[in-house]
Image (cartoon, rainbow, N blue to C red; front, side, top):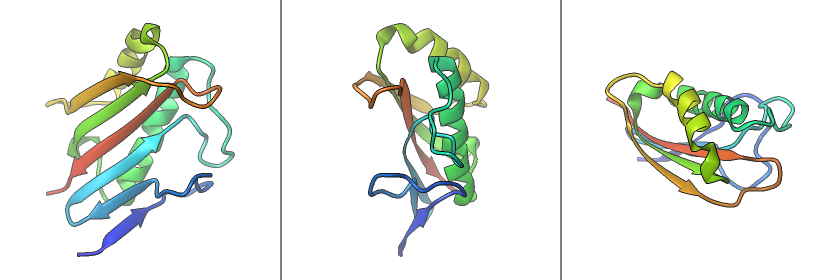
Length: 125
């Protein structure tokens, strides 16, 4: 069974990776950041604004595989500051449906101007 790259419309990533990959019924979305898909510019100066754009980017990659948020079994959230957790969590919760997927949140360094990165693992029926 082949591995298929998932690349939603817009500017391709500036690093050597696929925004997502599907193999069989498994979809892995690479870590997405708050880049606008058309301009490549960072969207937002707050973690709430960036989280919203990041999740839109994750959903766009999922859509390329015929998946939705409801197919996600695991999200990983990477934050640059522990103080951003509550603000990120409020936005994150608006994008999800029950039953909620599993999630891990870790604190990392990201390139300047980026506050949050999120990846996802989905399984299609």
